[in-house]
Length: 215
Image (tube, rainbow, N blue to C red; front, side):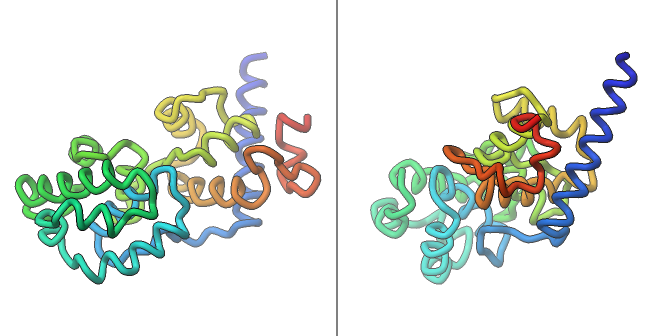
């Protein structure tokens, strides 16, 4: 019975991944705009409880003004707060950006490290931010758990966990590693376009036949 249940779960995951691939494609892309590794790090710090569209609008001006890790490390905090005011929580985010860049200069020669422990040791950097950087900058298979990934993964039955770190580990166990970066993009896209927080559009969802909300 247990073997059958496990086999059925594997089949379901395979069908879900196939449906996501067909609907959202398999191109690697990032929702945040950046050109340099430290820019993605900073953009992701700013993205906490803020839309990617707003962060990208702020980043466009910000990365013209502050062109290097050193520029951010030596920024005046009051001025940086004004520069990023519209992303919300700007006092905390400005302090994290400056302190993280100071640590990059002091401990890593101004370069963004690739290790999960090194990244999460930076001020304002949790596992979500670290995994965004690892996946897009270093192409290290990483699962990023934001509100969309957490919500959609639970609804379609990929996990019962609610803590982001536990969701990350649960998905790593059932999702093939070559899909780790891709599943982030696909579940985020699905959460934004169909599986909304308050009113999921189940009638038009291509995963309805696989989703435990509809079974």
